[in-house]
Length: 376
Figure 1 (tube, rainbow, N blue to C red):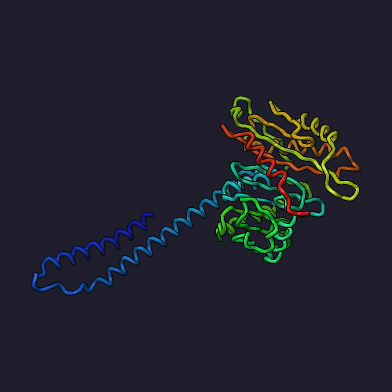
Figure 2: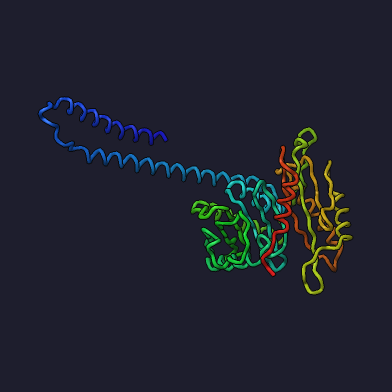
């Protein structure tokens, strides 16, 4: 900025001096001897064009610099939030959360299709963020969206797929997208040049994402690929840390609260997904109750869903509490040797602060947990 001001001042000083000199010459000219046409008019026009071009260029450079600093700050925040985490799903939920915040995405997903079981984390930002963890091969509740996007990503190879306006893509004409999906990025997560997953980011405006977004997301994709490699065998160099419990005198004020919504599914004899019977959900509820802390509670939400209400739990410690809930479910699941591979959980969570409306949080939870599918 200092160099910009110095150069601008020098150029403007030349123009001002030139204007003063011309004014003095004009005053000295007699009335009966008109002043000849200004020989420096073209030069002054050139100077003005230079200044305008220079200002526009500097403005673009400054804007680009701010974007790059913002992207790097966002990437730093992601690294800071996951560097002491050992649980892969918790790490992925933090990445989705930070990506929604720092890259201004309206929707973000990490999808890992696998023969041992699909892992999908989706985050959506409307009035507030809500993150969902599930095992179905679908994005936004649509298998067609996930399949067509995967095909397009495969055609793009190792490059990031950038769709400026998904409404103009014929492949997706039959998909009913929510308002948060307009421009879409799909970045393959590669190990040994083979995709092991995808990072999907969307925005409600067309042509929103640019090359700088892609550069930073490629770095993030490489980090996620390395983490996937470390967790593929289910082991890390360090054990999973126990959830941090804040001292009583450091607890967040009671108006900060978090919610988690859990839906359980199983497979029938034909391999079709169906909701877990209420009696089994009641057993899971008892198991979850054994790991609750403070004023936390777990309630039925409808017939076969569980709602965990967590007063005083902020967004910083929520992922650790969600991990505890998942581990409690997996412990219950492990006791059912013949059924455990058929039983899955669809889990979503969010945090509210201050005067935010709980009913709106549950409304968003319902939208994200049960998106209307366009599939038959």
